Length: 467
Ligand code: 5AD
Image 1 (spheres, protein in one colour):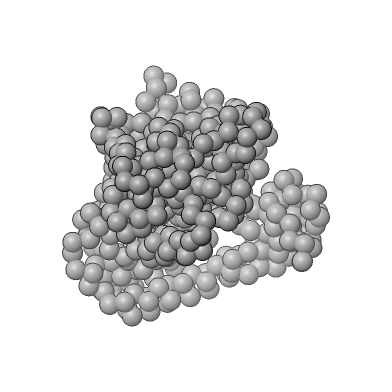
Image 2: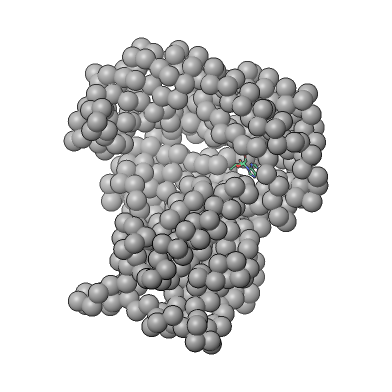
């Protein structure tokens, strides 16, 4: 598998495509003006982290990060195509960009899932784009950039059949407290609704020794919180001879001196085993939080979605989490209006909300995606029905969260202060269970772990006071 499928095309043979000179980054330490770049990121935490790695790669080549499109010579969009709306956004942004910088053309790249999905067609739809690169080809970025630097204006990296991970120490992390760390890339599940296997390629796990080395380095750099990432994080399989299980890996990361919080996202119910709950119970640094997307409460719909579990099997996993000694919060993703979803199926999803009492739910209307198994089936639930179901589900969940959050009033939490809102004089912090807590404080407290008592609660956050 691998490199032979990488396409690096250099079709900049017409004068129109040779827009001025190529980008020429200044050698590090030189006083030449550096080429500037700005990355705009859409979508999931994996995309956010990919952008951090891309930014690191660019900086190492002598490029300089800036804070706006206007200041940038090179603008990169790291895109999401999970739902049609997200994918469409990119083209409207590209149009706006073209108008805004008509007299001062920029070099523009499209990265990530839309790049992979649309491929060369992007150059037709948006001729101002010079670089199209899917996430499975990021290891090729230095080569692709070199092409651009030489003035080529149509450069592509669209290899999907890869066994490589985008491993780089050049990452430029944006969050000073929480370090994202990819442990498994791609996805082999092929859920009927999901475009990810077609945009991120096959599942590739990183070896435990490399992951642990990187965690130690991050802890040494002062990151108290580490968030392990994977499209299906608990499908991680140790390719090294240590053969750690996912739960063992969690335990090892949690034991690293300096690591105070470990989160992991996203777990698939199919691979969610009791040893993960045992690990959380026995390692205080493992956060009291599990994100376990269910997608639907109806076994019939789950079967059509090719999720690999029934409602009952999912509820057994929930029971296992609820039996833990620690109060583990549970969040989920739900799709309403999947092909053929009846009112009865939907009622089952509503009753699942009551049964589980989730702490947070991310809910979406089904959106057919290209290449997927369901993409070729009729999108049979009318838009108005999808909208009504989504609204009903969100209202039911709001009521549940008011209840669960209110039950926490009076309790005391360790809160990581993450930001300060000067207008309100409030610190915004987060509990181990991923709840947001607002409380009076000072900007100097940002980055500290504080003890806070919840004094009141809304559906989405708590209000507290420091002890
Ligand atoms: N339509 C709507 N929602 C989707 N998701 C994934 N694919 C689709 C789709 N085609 C949702 C799922 C997933 C989350 C990241 O996005 O709930 O867990």
